[in-house]
Length: 211
Image (cartoon, rainbow, N blue to C red):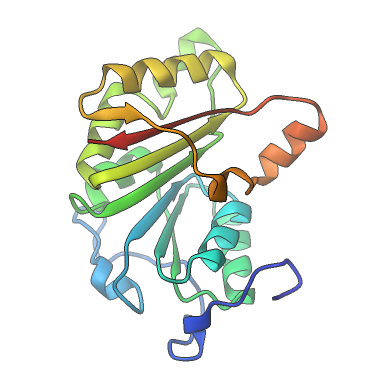
């Protein structure tokens, strides 16, 4: 266990981690070659907007039998996430700098994702900016294509209006059903969530399964 409390990935001895978990795909117009991206084949979990990796690195360390891909637009945050992954010697974590909606639509192979985590996306609270929100009917349709049958989506936000809209969008989408959040993810907090809790701000959560 390293200084941040991450358990070292047990596969690290057989598969040394890369110099950096941040990668550049061969093409930004074709689906990713997931078989060539990770040391071993395993179910894939995706975090959209992984920030500095506080959740993703800890979750990847807990689950060495799964592969994890983090999407993040800001390179400074991505580098912090990469530092966490390398300190924990994670061989099952890769990071990509990309705009989330584009990455989901064009870079994820159909049926490739077992679990998708979306924690505290920008709520764009002003009505004139709602068109910029990530969770929208077209995005959910793209996500359904990227998810495997039975795939799950876990969402968190601190914005009540956005939370209600998220629930509406998934209720209107075909093949998605609400499910309870598993205990093993519920106790892992992002840095945003820790800050919100310190200020007494409630986290609003919703979870769905692709039928």
